[in-house]
Length: 195
Image (cartoon, rainbow, N blue to C red):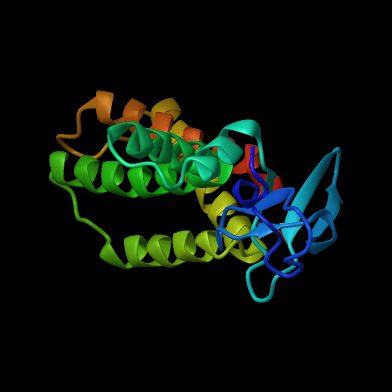
């Protein structure tokens, strides 16, 4: 591999990069990455202001994608697609995708049951998802609380048989599934959101 093929640190061009930020997409050396211990997990955070995104080590596949950056044709495009997919496949992005899906499923459930759609709640939910996209801890806390509350509410409705008139019971179980899923995924993705 030629020296031009190895990415260099954005802030220290004379050094080889060891990390890539998943938010700003830049390459950094070890000095430019903050290693913060969160419980039993070490979070690698981009020091480049105002990013503060999550950094991941540059593996051989990413170096290979950079090395062949000058190639043409479908083989080059295939490598680039796989590279971007690998970079975006994290707990952070899975959590964001699931929370958007939860809002869509809940709107479909409300329309399917013929009940009122509370658009104010979904606007608030969208603002929280945007806060999560910015990796804000307060947004994570509020979203986790709302997901837990909705999960408890659906469990109560199932236990007390308090369904909306004309609402199929299967929709209640679907609601339990996606609210509980959102709650669990948010707990798992806790290290992704800094205080």
